[in-house]
Image 1 (cartoon, rainbow, N blue to C red):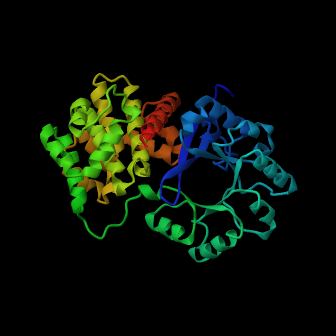
Image 2: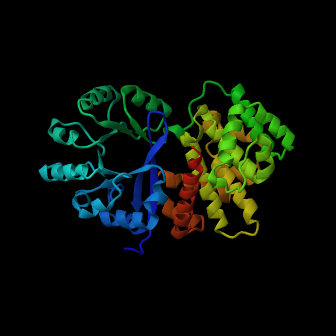
Length: 411
């Protein structure tokens, strides 16, 4: 078991401020994907979870976040559960567990030890009242519950001091409905989905940011770039916070905008300006979930390309990073990717990757997206298409998460 390799998926969980506070962790071995009897792709045994987390490392996988993971009946009852770091994990009981007196006693014991417990894909029943007084979180599949019933369900659960988590929230409109109903946590990629637009133009404030990006892509003189920054104080502030984070690895502390522009150099400047665009979104700084996901995509693509040892390695790795970072820019600006790409000075392989998901960089971007969605079956075939191994992906993924965690130390 110790030598077995795993796919690792992390699905974001956000609070009412739309800040990522946790990830649901999903582990799957390539072998399990080949077994027809494995029908529940969210289920893994205690040995798999413990081995995978031991190999990856809790801190490496989660950073400052908490981790939710599913447990079956046997996993729940195993004494191995008590080896898990109780302050960093949420034990999520699968919906197919028979909720009998034995399970209730086990939950109460784990709760007494300081563990946080959640019921997955739960449907209300008065028979579960003792559990509602014991567990901390109820996860509701809002795609399976008619909107007309959700309001009443929320009211019923408010009889207990429970945190309500809406699962499968996939659109901004869906999030708004669930938030208004009183849900506390939200799971899904609604924040990374383009919204339906009533107009086809970028607003005035975003035009300036887009102009800045265009300038750095076109390698404009530093004086012009600095002037654009000066017109956007919030963007300047976020850039300085980003470049002063430990992730950039500078030995000197950046004090001024001109200092940052001079010391960083063009390629790093491109990276950190793009990150700063996300960080400045809605004034939420580094807490933006778009920033976290975009940063993960960019760094993962960079590392996967670097691992190939191509002749033009550094330049190509920089382009790969930009593909990942820019892949959510349409969501940030609420404009189609095609329109945005037309306004930027992008090289052809970057343009094709962003608009069509084609070419080598497009294939790597698709791989990153499948990883986010925990589409393990799709990833396995796509790895081969990209000429990568699971070892390549695992190594790059852990280094990426570590880098993103260090980036967030600037908070």
